[in-house]
Length: 210
Image 1 (cartoon, rainbow, N blue to C red):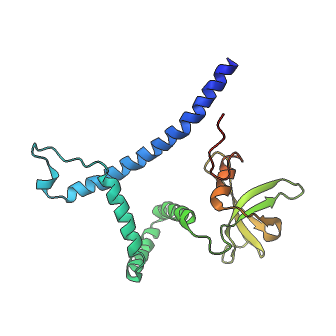
Image 2 (spheres, rainbow, N blue to C red; image 1 turned 90 degrees about the vertical axis):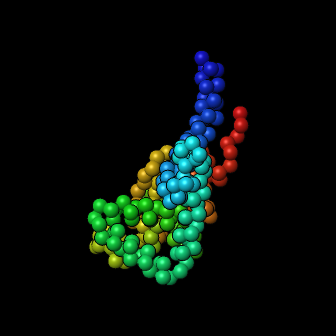
Image 3 (spheres, rainbow, N blue to C red; image 1 turned 60 degrees about the vertical axis):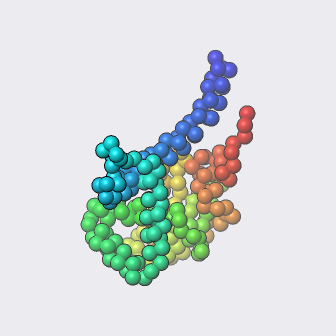
């Protein structure tokens, strides 16, 4: 039974990551097909929308292609100050709605963090030593300027550091004195993998084969 358990564990380790990745890709593909594919068909003339037998045409992958083109087009338009000004006006209108404001801000800040280039000392990977011990936590400096925050949240010489938790989506944001932080020469992606996998992987390289 012990040998059988090891064999099952090896099979589980090989199958689950691949299956989870394929499932996520399939979900993204189907979502893009549903949103952009149906929109594309709705914009086509009736003569092009249906085949000779009267059936609605299905173009596999059209939704994904249209979605990529739309994202690239919006990215190009965001380089123009006129479009940026209009976009910010619309964004301000969205942020004026209480419930929508929280959801939109959370998604916006998350994707900004994932795509933002670290041209300053923001988002720096640091190690925080717990007071009175040698235990260290890996975190990310999210905000160095705490001015403007309500009294009692941030003080002089403190920064906001995010400490993610392993094997789940979540974490803690602590206001930590900069004197208690040690910079780490590690990319954000590698540090995040290290924390989320509890130290199992930090460089994205495949695990050793057994």
